[in-house]
Length: 361
Figure 1 (spheres, helix red, strand yellow):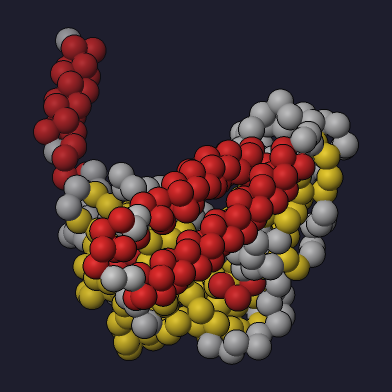
Figure 2 (cartoon, rainbow, N blue to C red):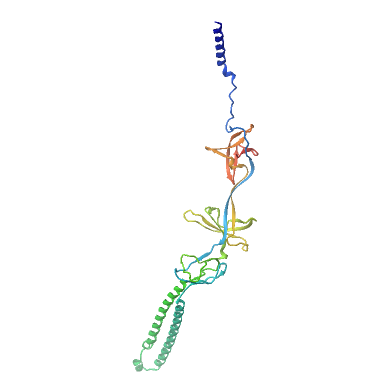
């Protein structure tokens, strides 16, 4: 009986402890309200700090200095042996200058012969016209001395002049035929020649050996008009370059600055990039074809605002937040309101103060 009583006392004590166990545990920790939450264990962070200043949104473009007015020359016929190249790359040429030609065979001699024939026929027309004028003058003198009876028997002027008129008409017909043949022959010659259409510098000359066959699809020369050289940049943002706007082109490691004015815009087709043409304000600027530079445009700005590195700002649904380090050195989440974004930074409208540290990683 004593043993049973001891077990009964043990069970009574155990029941009492079970009923009072809740009061012996520590109280549940109360977490801070959003937007600050603790996450993870204490660790080392890469920090950045909220700054105050101006935020400027810019866009950078690449511009190339080149001749806007260019022409590429190809032979008009294929399969004809190449004969002679008269200029080389880097030379200055004038409009109409002969640059190269294919084998013209006898076409040039034929054209010269036809020109001589036309000149001979023209001289014969002139001689016939002079003889006609003399015949008319003689008839008019003789007619003035005739009486009525003699005039009735005399040949009329039209009959006297008819042989001359027929001769002149025949000669003019021959000249017309000769000119048509000459034009055809000269066209054959022109097809086998390359002449400059504009004055400028030969910026490309194809290497051709005498006797090589022509190909009408291959460019033989490129001529660039240095007087038309401008900075050209390609972009879809044509609205950023209204005609007359002044911009700066910066070239090289020395950052040489060339003030320029927008003088034209060419839209692209079907949504493709267009071209913007920038004329250097200094006409004597020491620029070479192919020089490349950068154009940086200021598109928008906010002055005297709080901002932080954009990589520190995270998104959750329609809210923005950053990670901060709490008083225990742990990562915590702080909700923020953001505004203007530019150059890798974000404006902070609320949620942080100047100098606050935020966690980048």
